[in-house]
Length: 153
Image (cartoon, rainbow, N blue to C red; front, side, top):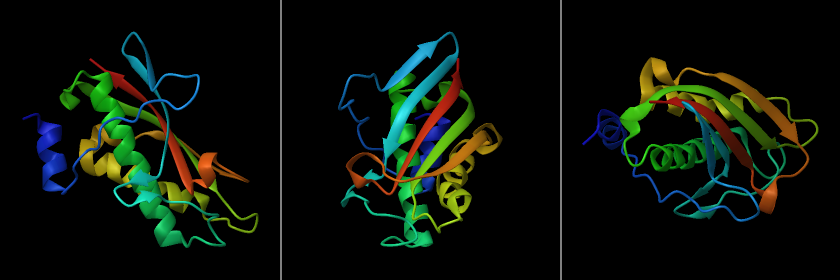
């Protein structure tokens, strides 16, 4: 078992199967040691977390949605690394998108749900640059979507 798999187990996280693309794109694209991972929405065992944050969805629930996005990203990382998460050298950047009510200004706090998990799982290698953007709508009315850039060996 890899070090990262052991860390996931300690955190009580069981990775889902990496989601297949639902349109004309790939789940991840690798060039050299850099992997760009397509946006992952907040889909978990109880289904898709939907709704507008600051209206139908509160901050704590939105942070849980961002965490689910991060779990789905890690599943894609694993697929990109042929099953060996110890090949992840660094989480370089996360891009966070929040289906936000126009009056909702805590978008960065929502994306902390994803950022915090990356650090919990990958330690210092999980610290990353980041964007956090509020938007008027996301696919399937998802509450949150997060994409990533990672470095692999």
